[in-house]
Length: 116
Ligand code: FES
Image (cartoon, rainbow, N blue to C red; front, top):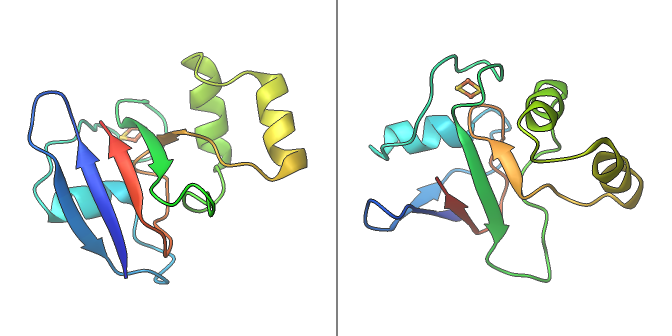
C-alpha cells in the first residue's frame, strides 16, 4: 500500500491509498477513482494537460513511480519542464523527475505528494 496525497491551491488536500505492485495503475486512474478534480484530456501522454509535480514523502527513498515513458519525455521537453541535458543526467544517475504526466506515471509502493 502506498499513500498518495493530492494537493492543489484550489482544493483541500486528499490522501488516498494506492494498491502498489499492480504496475498498471496510473496516477490519473487513481485520481479519478477518488474523485480528485485533476485536469486531463487525451489520457494518452500527448496533450500535457495532466501535468503534475511529484515529490517523495520519504526523502531518502525518492523513487517516485515508474520511469518516464517516451511520451512523457517528449511532452515534458515541449512544455519546457525538462531539458535534454537534465534528461540525460536523470538517465545516467537514475534520478526521478519531479514533473510527470498523471496519465503515464505508474504508481509504485511509496508515499508521494502530487501537486496538480
Ligand atoms: S491526459 Fe493528455 S497527457 Fe495526460
